[in-house]
Amino acid sequence: GQQLNQSPQSMFIQEGEDVSMNCTSSSIFNTWLWYKQEPGEGPVLLIALYKAGELTSNGRLTAQFGITRKDSFLNISASIPSDVGIYFCAVPLAGGTSYGKLTFGQGTILTVHP
Amino acid sequence: SQTIHQWPATLVQPVGSPLSLECTVEGTSNPNLYWYRQAAGRGLQLLFYSVGIGQISSEVPQNLSASRPQDRQFILSSKKLLLSDSGFYLCAWSDQGKQPQHFGDGTRLSIL
Image (tube, rainbow over all chains, first blue to last red; front, side, top):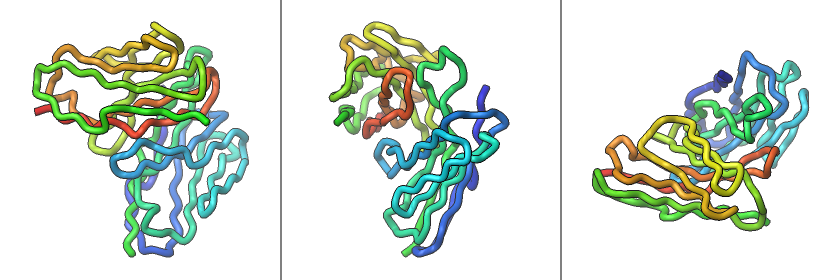
């Protein structure tokens, strides 16, 4: 089945630093999604990417849909304490009977020290 | 705009007791609905999904069941809870045939 390799598994950074994380797969996808989950809450969609090579920003967040369609990157600039959480990449399952199901990466736990 | 509600937010239940978690969606019709379990704050495991009223598909064999009695209502149930049923349960919805999925705030279930 489809597997996503998300890295790094965790990051400990100082406030103000930039953050980069990525997801890779051996399969090709037409959509990449990035979610953030804060403690005790459900994941919230940050950025959705629908086209290979697409670069999309949401405030200090920037995500790119890899040109090979097998990877995606999420960058956070000038991190702040409220960026703390778990970041997940996700892709739709392939096939006509996928019913909108998603495969998720294992997540990147981000800790920001003031 | 669309909203999704889950309740309760937290639940502590004894082993062997029944379970009913509810999820409702507002502002859309005929959504796809999903139940996930998340253990230890990592990794989302899809438990059930539904593409319409009364239509439930199970992803993994388990002690839980799901039902969709109304278009925008999704219920997760168990007749007898096990210790291993502890976790964070998330409901999500998406438009038919489209991405992305949108999540509720989850239910923290602790089994004693």
